[in-house]
Image (cartoon, rainbow, N blue to C red):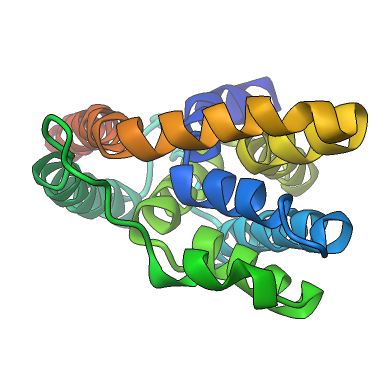
Amino acid sequence: MGEAIGQILSYGVAVALSAFPIIGVVLMLATPRARSNGPALLLGWVLGLALVGTLVLLVSGGAGPSDQGQPAGWVSALDLVLGVLLLWVAVKEWRARPRGDEEVPLPKWMKTVDSFTPVKALALGMALSALNPKNLLLSIAAASAIARTDASAGAQAVALAVYVLLGALGPGTPVVLYFALKERSQHILDGLKLWMERNNTAIMAVICLLFAAKLVGNAISDLSS
């Protein structure tokens, strides 16, 4: 179990730093339906991460290391593909970063959060975690890293739960601050939102580049041995 959990710690932190769900939660916490929509988006985010991870673990059954300690060939190939895709995402994010006082473009849905229902907020959270390319690739990579260990099914489930918990820290922090500090949290949340808007692309570019190098390096090492 320790090996499986160790494999996903960095992935969980990377997913937790996703800007759009954090910004989305902060915006929803400033609406009349804050007490329902904020937690609903967080729940959707958690369900999306858990769903992707569970599906990958189910599909990857039997992908543990061989007697020689080497992962299955297709697992290494998957790492290579994921690494290349994350490299593409890193380049895309870096090219989209704001320069100087350039305005940061935000998704159109952020302008309509006042009209969101809890169900729509839940669906948005699931979409942000399960369909966003960067988060989807990191979740697949995390579940693949768990699957390639020789941990039991129960231990793998625990490792996946740890990954989901870590990934929930990003959008979960504003929700906790809102309920703990109430009106006093607004200044903190506004500052967090502005910082994430301004630095999101650069942060994501660096994260994706690091994980791309890690996955490609692992795949080349495994496939050549």
